[in-house]
Structures are given as C-alpha cells and as structure tokens.
Length: 86
Image: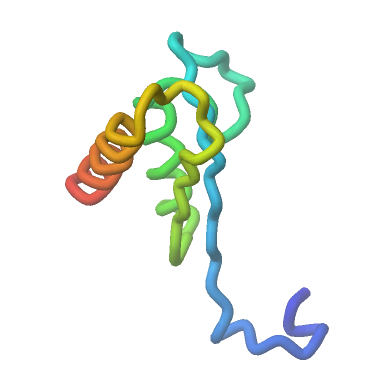
C-alpha cells in the first residue's frame, strides 16, 4: 500500500507506541494492548517485538497509578530490564 503512494518501503520502520494503563488485577482476554498488569504489559512488549517493531515507545506519562516520579522511573527501568533479558 505505501509503495503505491511512492514511499520506499525498504526505508520504512514500524514504530509502536504503547500508551500503558496498569490495572490491579489481570485484565480479561479481550483487553486492549498495553492495558493490564505488568506481566500483561510485558506480553504486549514481546508481541510488538515478534511483529517486527523497529522501535517501541512505552508511554507511562498518562498513568495516575504512579504516586511519584521515582515509582514511574523504577517501573520504566523494570520494563526495560525485563524486555532486554527475555
């Protein structure tokens, strides 16, 4: 489709943005991507990688679940560590 509009598909990248919403309990089977527990979010990170994402932006900014900036940064570090060791 993109090549039909004159785009060079060899130069295109797939960038996924995950607007995360954490829940206290696992979200149901029809949950949207990047909604649920940390383990469910990690499943979504792995799904994006398996789909061939060149880049994944995990957006934690709109999360009222965090009580401090430190908590948000610690969660971001945990997501990064879990994603890179899997």
